[in-house]
Length: 413
Image (cartoon, rainbow, N blue to C red; front, top):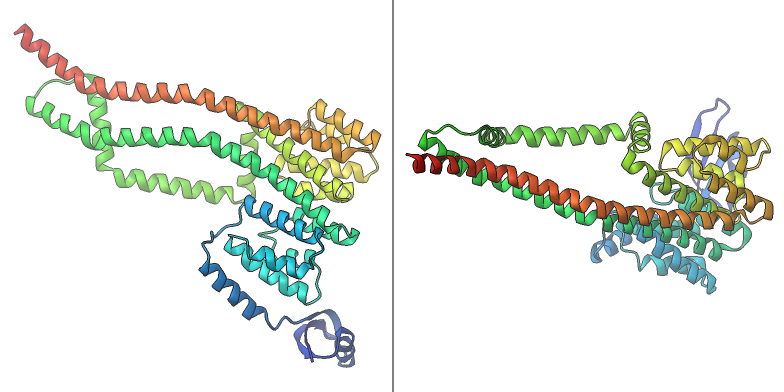
C-alpha cells in the first residue's frame, strides 16, 4: 500500500504533518477529516528519493562534472528534452536520457529529484519549481504553458533558442574581455618584477655610491620600498575591499546602486541599455511565441530583469497594460525604451504579431551589443599598450637617470 505525506490543521489552527498508508489521496483526506483535521496538502511519498539522490551523487563522482549550472547546460538540456519529447519518448524516459548527458553536478541532482516527482504523479513544471536556484521562472512558466497546451516540445524548443541567444552574448563578452584581461595580468606581472626585484637591486647600488637621486627615482624607490614593507597591508586591503563590495552588491540597496551606476557611466551606458533591451525583447518574444499571456509575460520579465531600473520600468508598463492600455504607450512613457522599439511594438500589436516583432527587436539589439563589444575591444588595445609603455618608461628613466648623471659627472671631472 502506498504511503502519502500530508499537512493539515487542527481546530486550533496548529499545523500537523505526517505520513499515512492508504489506497489513494481521497482515502487519506477521508481519514484525516474523520480525525477533525482540515487537510491542506496530500502527496505521494517518494520512498526512493534518498536512494535516487545517492545514486545520482555516485554518478556525479564517476563523471567529470562542474559544480555550477551554466547557460550551456540549460541549452543542452532544453534541446535534448525537446528532441526526445517531440519524438514521442515518455517524459520519464526523456529525463533519464537527459540526465545521462549533463555535466553539471547540481543539475544532475535536481533532475533525479524531478524524475521522482514526475514518477509520483506531479507535473514537470511542479518538479522544476522545487529547484528555483537552478530553473528560472521563465523555465517553469514555459514548461507549464507547454504542458497545459499539449505542446511541451515546442515550448522547450523556444526555451532552447532563448538560452542559445543568451549564451551567444555571453560568449561574445567573454571573448572580448579575454585580451584586456591578459594585458592587465601581463602589466601586473611586469610591475611586480620591477618593484620587488629590479628596483631594489639598483637601490642598493645607488645607496653605496651616496649620490643625490632625481625626484622621479626617489618616488619610484619610495613606492618600491612601501610595496615591499607593506605587501601584507596591500593584499589584505585589496581582499577586504573586494569582500566588502561583493557583500554590499548582494544587498537590495547595493544592487540598486550598481544598476544606477551602470546606466550612468558614459562608456558602458550604451552597452547596458542594449543588453537590457535585447534581454527584454528576447524574453517577450520567447514567452509570447510559447503562448504565455502578455500580462504574465511582463510579470516574469519584471522579476527576472538583470537591471532593477529596467525591472521597475517593466513593472510600470505591466500595470498600465493591466488597466487596459496598449503595450507601446506606457513603454514610451517610461523613457527606458527608444522610439524605434516603441514603434515596432506598436506595429506588432496592430498586426497581431507582437511576439515575432519582439524577436526582430531582440536580434537588432543583440547585433548592436556584438558591434559595441568589438569596438570597445579595439579601443582598449591602444590605451592599454600606451599605459604599459608609460609605466615601463617611468621605471626605466628612474633607473637610468642616476646612471647618466653619474657618467656625466665622471666625464666632466
